[in-house]
Length: 75
Image (cartoon, rainbow, N blue to C red):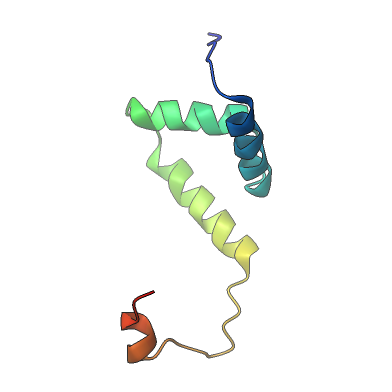
């Protein structure tokens, strides 16, 4: 089914950039959101996506950790 929405152009452009940064399309992001909203999102898909994002991120802390003061610091 096709769906027509009215969205400000600048919002669409920022959303497209966010989708590209996630390696997907705006269409796919909207589809996923609607599936989740309607309760059709599959937990396995969410777990797979989390694993893919975790693997792609690298997470190289080189042993560095927050200390107590940094964790509780207020900006």
